[in-house]
Amino acid sequence: MTTTTTPSSLAIAATGMRKAYGDKTVLDGIDLTVPAGTVFALLGPNGAGKTTAVKILSTLITADAGALNVGGHDIATSPDGVRAAVGVTGQFSAVDGLITGEENMLLMADLHHLPKREGRRVTAELLQRFDLTEAAKKPAATFSGGMKRRLDIAMTLVGSPRIIFLDEPTTGLDPRSRHNMWAIIRELVSGGVTVFLTTQYLEEADELAHRIAVLSSGRIAAEGTAEELKRLIPGGHVRLRFTDPEAYRSAAALLREAARNERTLSLQIPSDGTQRELRSLLDWLDSAGVEADELTVHTPDLDDVFFALTGSTHLPNQPMESLR
Image (cartoon, rainbow, N blue to C red):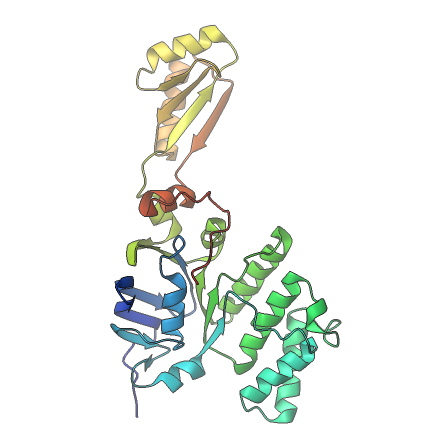
């Protein structure tokens, strides 16, 4: 039976996805579209429903409502087709620490019903690709956090999925391991794989995602590129700092709209940070004979977007509790 209803340019198309547990609505009819060969990031505070969305789209749990199509297959009528097209790396490692890295890979090959020779070939290639060949014969329990995460993704790739769900893949990793993981994700996408990413690091979404959706209270609060989302939030400004109190007072008298800080001898002027606006400000300062010792530009970042759209009190780029 053919169930393909999604344009080939879309890897995921979800309309009206809804899920509730008792009287608690976790997903309240959200819509998601993910073009093939891109990274899509789903952001949200603790309890927003990120992991629930991943579990539904990867067929681990069923939605209460919604038209859901993944990899060209309708989840309701062709879940096996979806499972053949996707791979999932969850928040918690699927690696078995009691056996070696190579044995973990071969076990995954057996689960995909690969012939023995093919399974060994794929295992060797992926271990080399993820820089795990030297450690392959050691128990996975001896691996570092970054090595376990790389092995986890390598195991996910044994079945050659076209779509990969990465649910907070860098949680708990040190900065170097996180950047290594980013390189792996970029490599996957350059090879045509679609990545659906949930993350607790706003910098990660900014670095990797072609499109970002912010999930709050079970609904999509906003969606777009990182730059489009940043433009939704006011608060951009130019900060002028002076070392000469007289120059500071002269500038303050002329720039009446500026917010003043007498202690630091600085002025904060509302600005969208565009080149035209900066040039106009600099030309005006020159014509007025005012010279600032330091000029800095602040434009809203994803931290600002996250807080404004979700009302979260979590510190930016700090781990948030995972949705259990």
